[in-house]
Length: 263
Length: 244
Image (cartoon, rainbow over all chains, first blue to last red; front, side):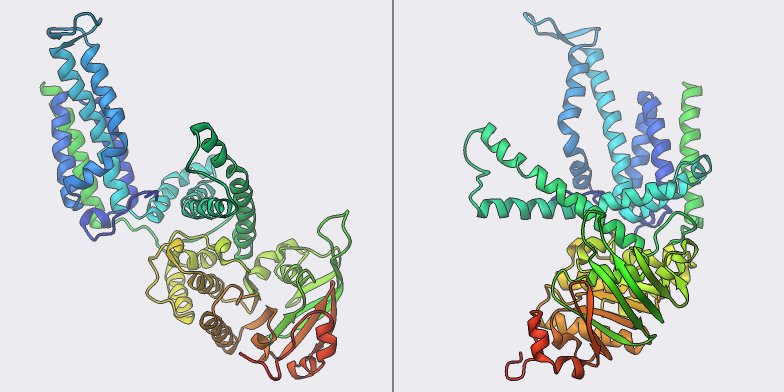
């Protein structure tokens, strides 16, 4: 089962923050992480660890968030390890590469940077229900509707995609079983044969998705959906906590700038 | 009052008409049952009631507003709610409460009012406590109740139900029928498509359709008394000896 968003219900200060503050903070953090020197990355990591602590994210949760990108992280590390010029630590003689001290440090630094990016995003998705996330994105994009970008439609589209995902998975299971019941075999035979068996599911799945989309569009229309003024169940309120969190983010940005000036 | 006059409709220019001149009145607050065999045009008819389909000829008039008048469509959709047959594909929200809120949000009501309507509608269908659940974690019966709550929250004057008890177990069926009665008591008119006449024995009026036409209209007693005519169009009348 896909765990989209992987939201973990909770009632921490991080959970209660306005999604807009969280989204913008993650954007700011990502920029800081991208531009960070090793010293700054240490500061940002400490900050990130503190936020994860506040959101009750355990090291196990962090590991879970990083697992899907583990292979990618390993590749980043190895590329830097083997292909950076510098003081050789270990020669891998017939092969045209060697491990250098610079390569080792650079590998650790870049991999750490990448992990910090992922973890920053994980704090957001773990502590924010998908609906609030979508609502926050919609509010942040709203100024763009003046130049013709329909932020509301975009938000509804994201919400629909999230809502339809489990439904399509169920449908896929249903179709697969219906075909198995009539003798289709998905588990034995050569890889090519099995691939062909599974791809026979694609067309009915697509058709049913289109039919569903059609029915859904009619149902939405029947419930009065249309372009134009619309309100939401939950108004986003910018509270004292949000002000505090924004101030902390501001301080972090100032601190990294200070580090850069003094260094 | 919804007034349908000599309504003719076909889905495709190439195909024959599937509604052949329907004339019908639906009074405010009434419970109207619509019965007839599969494919006789019941669903097509009710889709006309809230301007999802438009007549090829004839008129559909809701509280004095023509469905063909584009400026009235919004108000007509607010007044005539629609509960479709498949609850699965009418749930829009990522959580139960957000789904119920979808209609009121489209009406641009203030948040506090939306909250109140969501709570009331969920209470009405007995789903208080399900607010934060994701729709795909609900059972078939619960999804059905959710689809009803989503329409009730718009506070319409009329609600059309397209086979609301399909695919439900007997207990689920009774629950839905009880909720429909409750909604009716609150003053909303019910248009109820059914196959099983036992489901609509309490209706104020029964409209029997066949092949795009209204065959007969009357009280349940009047209509169900004519067992022969009904079985001729392959509907089971009230079971005399059988029963559940």
